[in-house]
Length: 380
Image (tube, rainbow, N blue to C red; front, side, top):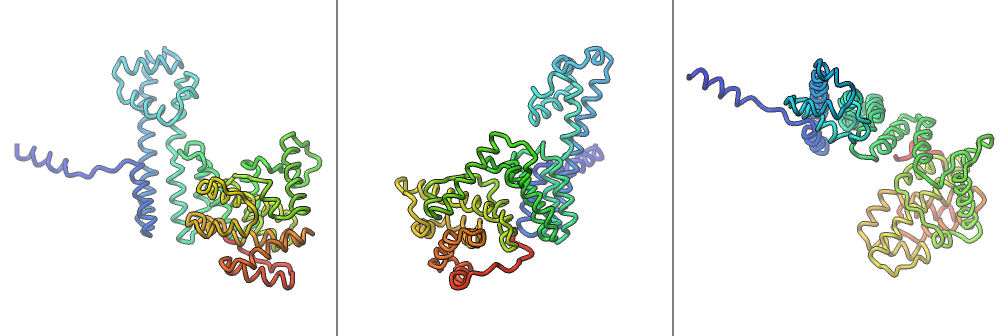
C-alpha cells in the first residue's frame, strides 16, 4: 500500500504541459520582454503540441473509418458521426467537434473523407511559424526569418486573423528592403495594393496597354485622373475638400513605394504618395470629426492645429510618417511638373516647426528646389 501511494504521489507531481495556444501566448509575453531564447522555445513547443494534437485526432478518425461497419456506411459524414456517437467512440466524436470549431461544417459537403483531410491542414500553426520568424528577425537572422514568414504565409488560410496574410507580406517586404532586394520588395508591395485597393487598376498603372481594361479599372483610372487634375489645377486644399479614401490596409504600401520611388525620380511616386497622403488625412479628418462633429476642413494648417491638440493623432502621424509623406509628395509633384502644388506642401511644412527635419528640408527646397539624394534603405 505504501508503494502504491508513493507511485500515485509521484505521478501526481508530473508537470502537465500547457495547451499549445497558451504556449504561444506565453511566448509572446517573453518576446515582448526581450527574452527571445525562451520565447523561441515556447513557440516551437506550441507548433509541436498543436501538430501532435491534430495528428492524434486524425488517427482517432482513421480508426473509426477503418471499422467494417463504418466502411459499409460509405462517405456520409452525417452517418459516420451518428455511428460514433451511438457506439461511444468518444475520441472520434471529440475530434469532429474540434474540427467544426475550426472549420465550417458546411464546407465538407457531408463527406467524411473531406473532413479527415482537414486535420492534415490543421496540423500547421501559421501563427507559431510567424512568431518563430519574428525571433529570427530581431536576432538578425534575416534569411531564416524570411523563410519562416513565407512558410507562415503559405498556411494563411487557417489563421484566425483574416488580415494575417497581409501583415505577413508587409514583414516579407520589410526584410527584402533591409537586404536591398528592391525588385522583390516592390513586387510584394504592389501585390498588396493590387489585391486590396479598389481605386488602383494595375493594368492602367503599369501601362499594360495590350491587356483588356475592366469597368472597375476604367472607373479607378477616371477617379485617379480627376484627383490628379484637381491637384494640378486647384491645389492641395481643394483636393482634400473633395476627396476621402479610408483604406488603411494599403496606406503603408503606397507610402513606402513612394519613399523608394521619389528620390529615384520615378513618376509613379506621385500617385503612390497621393494615395498615402489622402488616406492619412482621411483618417485624421474622421478622428477630428468624431470629437468635433461640426468640423469642416479648410486647409492643412488648420487641420494641423487639430492634430497638435489630440494625443491620439500625434501618435498616428508619427506612425505613418505624416510629415515625411508630405515632403516627398511635394518632391514628386514638383518634379512631375505640378510645381505650384508641390511648393504649397513645402510651404506648409516650412510653417510647422513640429515637422522637425522635414521642416528644415522644406525650407531648403523653397529656396533652391533640387532632386532628392538617393536613399538606399527607406524605413519600413
